[in-house]
Amino acid sequence: MMRDYKKNPPKVCIICHGLGSGGIESFVVSLATGLKKKMFDVKLVMALDDNGISQFREQEIEEAGIEMFRTSDLGSVTRCFKHMVKLYRYLKSNKFDIVHSNMNMFNGINLAVAWFAGVTVRVAHAHAVESERRSGSIARRVYKTAMHLLILFFANKKCAVSLPAAESSYGKNAVKTGKVLVINNGIDIRKFAKVNEKNYLSKSLITVGRLVAIKNPEFIIQIMSALKEKKYTLIWVGSGELEEKIHSDIEKKGLTNSITMLGARKDIDRLLQTASVFLLPSISEGLSIATLEAQAAGLPCVISDTVPQEVDCGLCTFLSLDESPDVWAEKIDSIVTGRTVKKLDADKLQKFSVDYMVEQVIEMYGLPC
Image (cartoon, rainbow, N blue to C red; front, side, top):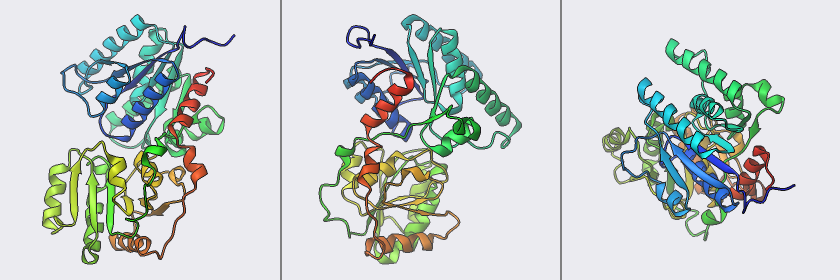
């Protein structure tokens, strides 16, 4: 007999680190609000101190009528233990049907707590390509191995945002045998759809991402230096720990008139309409929601070949980070001047819709849509 969601809605707890401006946070917001529309009883747990400071995307969760609960920051062993205790009590008292954890390797801890709390469906969701467990310091290797074993033991549903993220997090054999589901991040395609083509041949670029080392900000500055004589400009959206250094480097390179730093923004859809090419030379990406949003806005994308190939809906040009900034600059110029032409695959883009993503997640949960 089919479950009546109105009378007996499935209770889902989505766990994340916070609600900042990154790709994981975008997924969490889309999933939580999407499940809410499907009549699920959704609650959100954040591994943050209850300090009264609102997160970047917290208002969207509030407006959707979704309860949020904070445990503790994870900056020390003591704080991790506090997180575990508060999480256990919250899960136990609410009697959830499903726990969906989105904290990469730390999913192992969260799902162990969920198992002890008696949660039946425990989902580990990998959002990043993990480095080899044999790499890094001894402490780091021990941590990654321990977390991997916890995930294998306590997660009875495993998924990832892309094939590389799935293979690096769970192993190629687990993927090959169908024990892991790849669920691509979903976006609101209609929100980002390009309004017109008037800016297509302009020399305005845009990049969206946290200002952290993995996004390769120094290389972005080098590319803009190579494009300086051709009068290209860049809109740079994002915030992070390297913000001060990036501002300093822009000044040193004489690019203050070429690069506009906007910080974290919520009007990405509008900003994409003003550009002609999207740029993303990341060192590593789980999938890249920003690249999907750019393609939905009709922008050709020049991105590093470390970004999973699944993200390409026809408008992506992949380049190696071993290539010089001049090569990247030349490829961008060839797109803007019409020497390189890309065409959007609308059918493939539809598979990255929020609705399709939510349906895949519900199917993974083992519940009818």
